[in-house]
Image 1 (cartoon, rainbow, N blue to C red):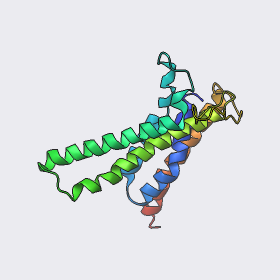
Image 2: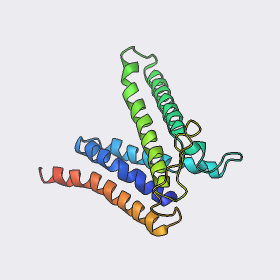
Image 3: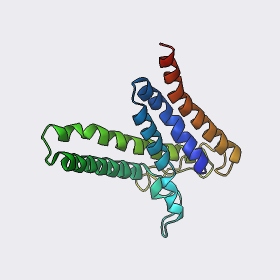
Image 4: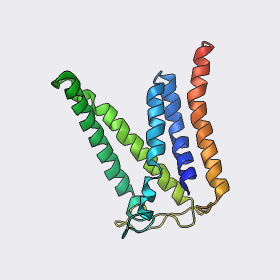
Length: 178
């Protein structure tokens, strides 16, 4: 898949959560989630710009997803912790655990965005080896080539449509009193 297709898959995967967040009156969190999921979706293709890293190698594995989402969780928690200390001057023992949930949320969204990237690449003939180097089995569904602009555009439009509907429909329903 190309970048557009990866964005579309990420948005499609996030749209049910966007709907739930919007229904729960957390539209800001839904919009932040969209930015995070779509923002990280193309990251595994950084391997195309790194010397000595093969394309669809280590950055296209579950190990990369685990490491990246763990780092995102830790950085978010540390930043929130630092921000709480800066605002209050000190950190109460009650506030530290409350910062874990948002940090885990960011970690989950990073994992979701990266996972959708792997799903986008598994549908191409080149496939991926998501468990390498532990298991070198290659997975491919061979549905479309990565360069297929029709497939990439269709995924992108579907992702935009699903996410737009997930945010818009609850607001319309709330307006009419449903």
